[in-house]
Image (tube, rainbow, N blue to C red):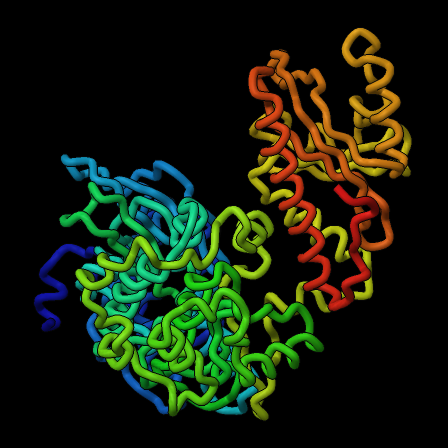
Amino acid sequence: MSEGALVGKPLRQPPLRWLLSLFSGRQVRLSLLVLLVLTRRPSLLQIWSDYWRRWRARRLRRLPSSTGSLKILRIADPFVRLSGEKQAFEKLYEVQLRITDSTFGSVFECRRRQDSEGLSVVVKIVRRKDHPLLNAVRDSKKDSKAPGAPMIQRYGIVVETEEFRRYMHKLLALEHENVVRYLEFFADTSSFYFVMERCPGLTLLEHLLAESAWQESSVRPLMQQIMKALSYIHGLDIVHRDVKLENLMILPPEEHSGGSVCLKLLDFGLGCELAGACGTFGTLGYMAPETFGSDRYGSGVDVFSAGVVLYILLTGRPPFQPPVNARVLEDHLQALHDGPDMSKKPLPSVTRHGCDLLDWMLLPDASGRCTASEALRHAWLQADSRAIGSWQKQEPELWSSYSSELHFLRVMGVWNGSSCSAGLSSTGGVNSLQCVEEAEGEEDEGILEELCFHLVRQMQVPVIIADPAGPDCPIVAVSGGFEALTGYRESEVVGKNCRILNQPRAHEIPSEIVELLRQSASGQRTFTGVLPNVRANGTYFDNMMHISPIDIGARKLLVGVQMEVSGCELHSDEQELLGAARKVLTAIRHWMRSRTGRSEFCRRSSPM
């Protein structure tokens, strides 16, 4: 712009922005920022915002990439940049439902405000500082003496590297019937917003528990679709790194064409490009042995995780118990290298081809493990569906969801825990594993007890835990199922007396039942019976309860499992309640064993 052009036009914001660009000293910038905040003039704040973006862009060009070399971000921006205005994303999308909170962000069901059809989408919101891929870059530079490392800490900038942007572009290009479709990405100064298609239905874990019995022929079509999804993304040089039951969605028939089951692979939040695959990422229990090392690895980590899924589909139980502390982590790594026991039931009932593929996918040596494309060409996945139908009626039942350990997995959330990432030291040792660190103080029984209570709260079965050693047996924890049944929140009942045990009303409970309850509270026996109860809204209902003593840590507590009954089918209701109570007690007992490695640490005081 010439000097005449500058003088001949009214003084407007562009010349002011040009003048501000002359100031480069840090003290000058800070003084200007303080002045703008104090004056709060919108025009000046906008000028400062423009200046800041231009200065930050110059700085970012000098920051290192994840490979350690200096790179200018030449990749096109995959994000729609939101203004600094608060709640800018909410102006575009209306939040309808909070679906879940994951390790690295929150997931919502939303609707685009300008969409005339009103179609729902799923939005995952991840704070910049929490994004695992960007944290991996930042953590790798944290102890470095390179000029770039202190710059990241000094200015608090979460770097969007060239590799990160390239990976985001690949996610937007995904288009496969067995892979979730990403629609658009947004970003502001604090968070990323990943908009994807809504996939209604059940997770594979929920689907397994919804089916009464499983045969080998029902497993095959699911594995075919899983391997098709992996073969597709591996062909695009994408590694998922978090293949597990919860990230596989079974769509209802009305949501897709064709009458067969349709499966989709979800959540690429821990994924990366194949060239940059390194570091300990994934979900403990699904992770391949090579992910715990310091070297780069390939797409075989996804095949190993899919092998774990196949093992669960065939047996109804996990092949490896996850580590819960540093000592057990060593045993877990050894178990990964040894491989699962292929002689345990019901694997002997699986066909030779099925066991061969399972063994190939779970090979600890990544160089000998099959690829997703090779698995698709395996004889077991190539079996003719028409031939299968001819002998399906005579096919043996492998396992039943009623007796499966998966009920323990669902109600306790132990084995299929949240995804985690870990940094690696220069020697390749694990610096931090989120799921491991939370139970490092295993000798502290109070920590174990609180962790157990936390997991009980996730149960959908109505459960209360009471302490008979306290005055009038106070309640110490309740499940989400209890809150749904009674309408009372945990905060409203914990610490209060367990009325049905020590303060029963004479007109409500017969004296002989009261005596049985008190014997149960003292640990002398279990109790099963129907008691009157009242909800938070004042309505009464018949409450069948099973009470059993159990040791959690050093404390002797009571576990009460409840259900509402009508009085017509008491015998069948009692059998259902006893079955639920057995699963809850078994879940607690298994969880405590997995946390301590000592089977005697948590034992039931009396048989059911």
